[in-house]
Length: 202
Image 1 (cartoon, rainbow, N blue to C red):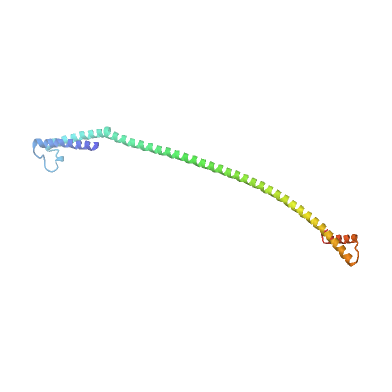
Image 2 (tube, rainbow, N blue to C red):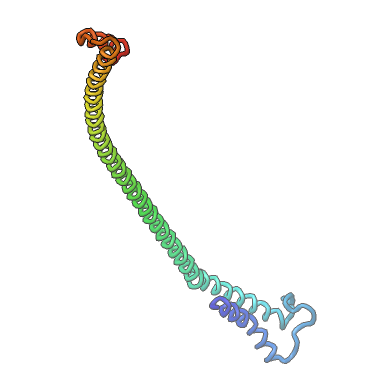
């Protein structure tokens, strides 16, 4: 906006001499291209004045641009660059902070997983040890019960074999007494013993 105002003022200042000359004389200086009529007795001095004024206005414009407008534009551009750089630095700092937070989160997660794995392994070992202890106790109890049952079976077998021996001896003696009229108890006992030994039941 300031640049536009300065340009308009320069154009107005450049046209003021011609307007003043036309107002004073009331005649058109020349026909055709008056800006080239430097040799005209009336238009020539006016054109020279216009050129001088234009040079002066151009110099003033250059001075204003170099010392007023351009520094302000440069300050605005520099301010924008500074804000952009600050925003980029803030974004980079935020990214760095976010990366650090993510790394800490990953480390904490891995640590929690390692602790969980350790606890699970410890619990499994404890459960396995408890299971092994229960299995050993159960095996010991079963072995004791099996030994007791085997001892009871052996005792029953021994008792049954004793009873079978007596039954066999009495039956043989009774049969011999009925058939022969007498029975030798020692011979009958020896015969029963041999027969049981032959059958593996002695």
